[in-house]
Length: 378
Length: 78
Image 1 (cartoon, helix red, strand yellow):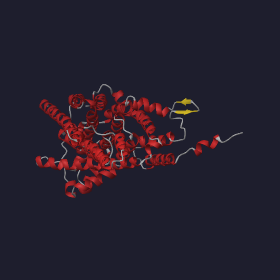
Image 2 (image 1 turned 30 degrees about the horizontal axis):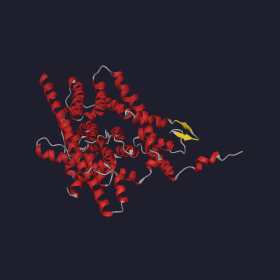
Image 3 (image 1 turned 60 degrees about the horizontal axis):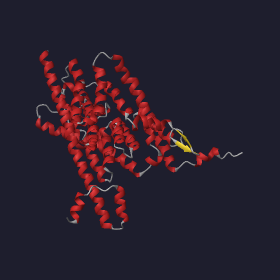
Image 4 (image 1 turned 30 degrees about the vertical axis):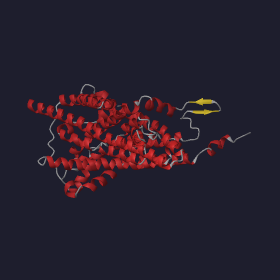
């Protein structure tokens, strides 16, 4: 009797697949041991191993003329490739989680969110200089949106060849914000600047404003950048469910069950783009490097923007670090700013201001995603 | 029309076209063709920077203004 089938697949493993098992193991280790974005990195790490087993049954295969359909490939084709449904639906949950109250009490901080998106566009230029074509460069730059679903959606719509690497970079650096941002902020601020105090006036926001806000944002973003409507619209739809006050159960479902279920599926589904032959190449390392550059540039430009703004509004100065919170990585970035502020002055409390800039970054990053798509559609 | 003008109005070459030019075994032509593609991409990237940042500032700036107006209306009611 021939038992060669037992080790046939073992000998079929390529060195690139071995690399992917290591990548998968590292992602799982980061998720479990280090607590880095576990909800995403753990399924992605497991998925990276799953799709790279020889003739893996989770991907479509043809053996001896018999075609089998793989569940992960099907999920990818239906949930991401055909409709971008998974990343878009996740925005309902994210919108339902966000309290825009601190931002609504200090609308000036909307500008911080806008400025901190500069890293996206500067990284696109660098990627082009490194030889990536425009669509791949734009997909890589959007890692700087610090927003995983936006990165996946833009790279998918633009047909980038590097979706897997971009998703890994986006989620890894979001988890690494507490390491990346202090470095970037300290590059462009003095201890005195970091210690600058900002009184928090607080104040309540009326129910009418909270309800009108998501509708206004959707209409304005839709008129200026129509391609952003899918992203902004679903983010704001989730927020309207939260703020309307009559859909309490739905709001909780969106924040918990819906967000968890989609996150779980998104993580394992994106692994379909992590097949060894597509992932193990020099460009993946370049993309990881460019993702880091995008995060650093976001933070640096955010800080510099506030410094310039302070020249024009000397009576109402903002701590420059709050500008760096304009990236979308919520709430890690706000915590980083609070910690750095207290390191410079133990009585300095910047958390509420940083949260305001941070949620502004949530809106700005999805608008940025839409604007990038708009450029290629127009 | 001289050759220079033809080059300037030509669309950016795809990677395959550049590879084809390399196949022409003409070094200077290959370098020039690749450079035209790169400079077109670069000007596109600079254009995205300008358009992108302008759009984001317009969207968030208008939202900030509307929110500021709503806030004033709220304060007046109180």
